[in-house]
Each structure stands twice: as structure tokens, then as C-alpha cells.
Length: 272
Image (cartoon, rainbow, N blue to C red; front, side):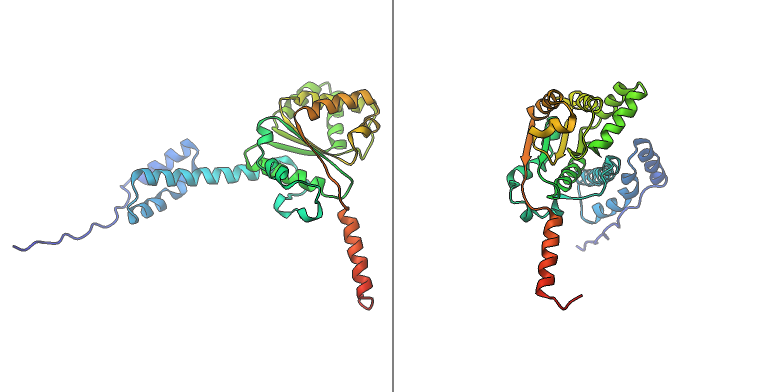
């Protein structure tokens, strides 16, 4: 008795009208990546005999990955970093005072979820701003909103809001950010009015949102910057209550570059 071998059916094409229906549904659901890749992944699923569940998971993973990537790009853009610098680009060998385990912990951004603070203290030129930006970028990658500015620009922002009788509204707006970064505290002294505004910024975020501060001055000299030892002490008290304080030491990278240049010139005096 002979048997007839049935030919293997070819991969089924989408039914008429189905692509336009899926296009409509993905627009309504605001899932453009699914709309762009469902057909390609469906062909791969048929070729590789995926289950329905495997196909659905692959499609959703593509959508989530694309959304997270675009979200990170947007959060980095709205953070207003002066430049995008990463922790991977930071040369840890030039800053032996920085504990690697502490940096590894901070890079997970769990401190942001807990509304904790980070204080980076140390002399100019050792990379505090680079570290702050790098940690800020990590926070955006973890899904947190971040806003960066220098201490003087934060004061200017708050002063303008105060003069416009909208300080409370401005502080409320700033509280929407999970992490704010205040760079260069101590470089420019502030008068008492500015110090009071700065205190209100810190107080408004106490146990509500994370603050990261970089400063070239130890806490004992913050009274010089804010023209009031009492206000400075109250501010420091709120900042360090739930905080990781990193006191960093090392050579300025500018000094290091200058020293290396002089050494190279001494070793090669005939080179221009």
C-alpha cells in the first residue's frame, strides 16, 4: 500500500486586512515598535516554530527596549548636563581616595529611589563634576528624572522665582525631579538672601527627593559661602541625614597634565 507524502505547507501570510487592523491597534495603544516589527518577528516565529507565548514575549521585549532607550535619551536631554560624561570614561586610577565599592553601590541609583543624598567634597580639578554627571546619567538610565545646574545658576533660578512671587510653585516644580545635582558649591559666595533661598531648596527636598552636591570646601567652611553659619549648619544637617559623603583627595587633572607636559619637554628638548 503506497502512501502519499503531503508537501509541507509554506509559511502563512497575514490575512487580508490584518496588517491595517494591527497598524490601527498599535497606534491606539501607542506601541509603534510593535507596529513596525510584528510582521518581521511573525515570520521568524513561523520559521523557528516559536510558541504563541514566545512570539508575544519577543514582541513585547522589543517594544519595552525601544521605549526605555528613547526614555533615557529624553531624560538625559532634559537633565541639562553641560556635557554627557559616563562613569566608564572616568579614570579611577587618578583618584585612589574614591572607594570602588561605594562608587559601585551609587552607580545602581538605589539612593535615588530612597530619596537619599550624595555629597562629593574635594579640591578643584579632581573630577567631582565628572562623577556627578556620570552618576546622574546612570540615574536617567534607571528611569529617574534628573536636573543639573551649578550652585550659582540654582540661586539665580530661585531668586527670579522669588521676585516673581512664585517661589513655592518653582520649588514644587523642582520636586518633580527625582534627583537634582548642585555643582560647584563654594566657588562663589552668596549673600544672606541667596543663602535662605538655597536652604529652602534643600529643605523642600528633605526625605522627598535626592540631592547631589559637589563642593571644593569642607563642611566647616560652608558658612563662608552662605554668609551665615546657622543657615549653613541647618542645611548641612538636612543634607547629610540620609547621605553618602565622599571626601576625595588627589591631584588636579590640570596640574597632572601640566606636569606630564613639562616632563615630556624635558625628556625631548629638541621637539617643538
